[in-house]
Image 1 (cartoon, rainbow, N blue to C red):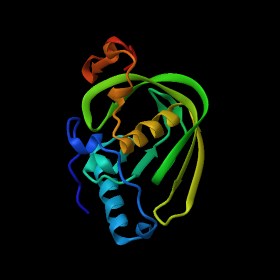
Image 2: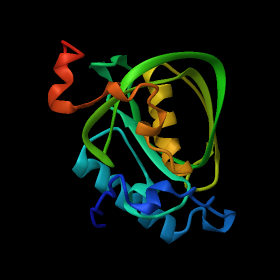
Image 3: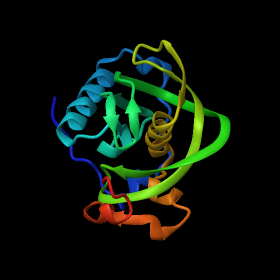
Length: 178
């Protein structure tokens, strides 16, 4: 399937609340084609996640993958490429932590965003089977970031201080290990 262009901040689709996927679409060829396009697009662009609206399809589908190992966000446990349809998040603990987030739809920038660090993710897989996960730390942040796209929210909307938005090339000024 083709690698699709990733929409950038300013495109109106990125500000729409995406439509829930109807039960009749689970397991469909159209859903599988969308997921294949998303996987190919994410692989080409790099990153850890992608939401369908980022490639111009306003439905509640997102993919995430953690390669695992040491990262600037600490040690991550690997998570194979996973598809989340019609996901919801419940905050289990309102304690927050901040990470310097980036986004394929906001290229070249990073922003310090505080988010809850203990969440429950409930969704469906592409066949309609239930998914129920508990995540904490950076993975919790990553899930919230991707699922925000399904509500028309970008990480820049979550900045508490606009002075904490920097070009990636200048990140070393605020993060010496960057």
